[in-house]
Image 1 (cartoon, helix red, strand yellow):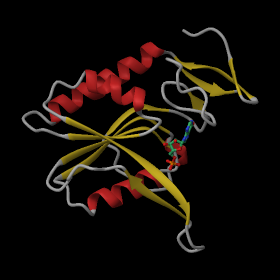
Image 2 (image 1 turned 90 degrees about the vertical axis):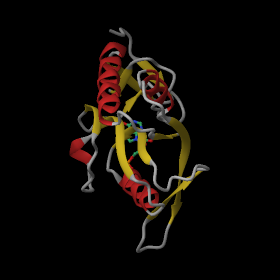
Image 3 (image 1 turned 180 degrees about the horizontal axis):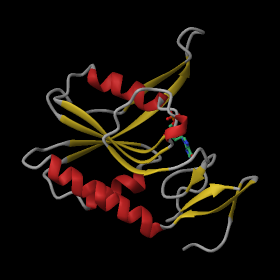
Length: 179
Ligand code: IMP
């Protein structure tokens, strides 16, 4: 268990979920994926930056033939009716007919995931599922089917294990929550 609180910019974060608990959740997800995709060659689509640590650990426990692509999601101010527009950047692979597994660090309101699912489905993959390390069920504002959920957490802001607060905190092995 990590002992000390950490300071990032102007905020204090207290130890929340230790590495061992994260690792166990990641292994469970990988085991389920290995079973569910036996005989297939899925394409993992990892969403940068936040999922880099989760994607690395998850993929180390995936024993299938598989491919990995990395994307970013750019946010733009839309019109007053569309609100914020989220666009996928960096997907070079042809996803038509492929079995996709989106790898995300955290689903909060679900706006980002909703937009990604819409854009990926428009490219006619054979299937799309989501693997997220963390989900905040109380914050979800969309009807999303998230098949692979690592850990459900309350509506707290967390950092570590790839997640940041204004750029800092991604490098910690454990998860911390804002005090
Ligand atoms: P959503 O579109 O509201 O679901 O937000 C998803 C994105 O917000 C994630 O990919 C993160 O980049 C960021 N985010 C949401 N909650 C947290 C948090 O507790 N810590 C760090 N980043 C977060």
